[in-house]
View 1: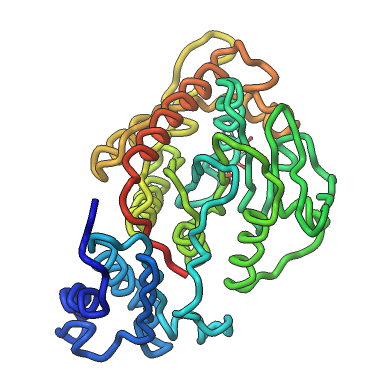
View 2: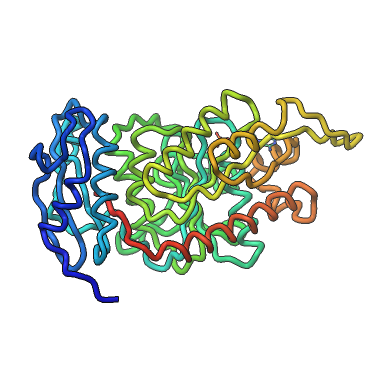
Amino acid sequence: MASAPITAERVLDALRSVIDPAKGANVVALGLVSGLSIRDGVVSFAVEVAPQEARDKEPLRVACAAAVGKLAGVTKVNAVLTAATAGRQAPAPRPHAEPVAKADIAGVRTILAVASGKGGVGKSTTAVNIALGLAAEGKKVGLLDADVYGPSIPRMLGLEGRRADAEDKVLLPHEAFGIRAMSMGFLVPGDTPMVWRGPMVTSALQQMLRQVRWGELDVLVIDFPPGTGDAHLTLAQTVPITGAVIVSTPQDIALIDARKGVKMFEKVAVPVLGIVENMSYFLCPHCGERSEIFGHGGAKREAEATGAPFLGEIPLDVRIRETSDAGTPIVHSEPEGPQAQVYRQLARTVWAGLERALASSGGPTISIE
Ligand code: ADP
């Protein structure tokens, strides 16, 4: 489809529709836009803010990127806050740089983020079993453990203590139960205390994502770090995530955090495939009775409130915990059992969501450095 060429004037016109609420004027009139460059449909620019304002101005940058992204003919928007990282001693932003951040990962067809608003809700267990469920459906699956603070995927896949080999400076993932896995746990010994600054987390994750020989994958599952802080937002912004799943327990307190998770992905235009309720009910292994100890059903209500689909519920089950902690996840070790069936159904639902999200992502990618 032919469209008018993108000119600086058209971009600035679009940006004039973005009002800085703190100052009550548009970003162009306020002189906040600098370093505008346009090349082959790729528009790059910086939004200038004072360092102390960086955090508050993030929505403004997102609004600028979105306004320009809507222009016909724009394929990518590379918008940066010029003072956003300066205060944290990160490299100076490069508004003229090639938009590398949200570049596709060669050979990887879709990326699924598995996230939670807080730790301990069973996010990693769910990520591993969804990954194995997808593999059981015949998909080629990779699993990236992005929890650099407490990587648990090596243990859950029975790979604890293994080191990652490299070939020509490219890391080789480990294989377990038919899936390929990469984790910070393969790069540093498990007993090394890790103190990370935000930018270090980001660059470590980019390396584990992009400098790994994943090969051809139908889906790369990313086990996000728990929470919704800066590092999460950066990860959600800089990785071409096809869709995200939020794991929550039914308790109110976890659900409040789950809502933050949904909001975080929405903010960066990543489709939320839905919310999973983990430890939803207790199925007595002796009598088969179902007890709803945490007041089951909260995630479904929360999903309805946020407009995200509800993807299903996973029981609180001793075999799920034992197999996960022993490094033989239940979808692999007891594939015909009722728990594995729950995960396999979840994997099918998630795959359908990924395919839908992929099909509807024909529009411009908002790329943020
Ligand atoms: P997170 O990644 O959210 O921190 P984990 O996946 O590490 O959580 O799970 C925390 C603990 O809860 C682990 O011991 C795990 O085996 C257990 N767990 C997770 N999901 C379930 C479940 N559905 N039933 C029983 N135990 C579970």
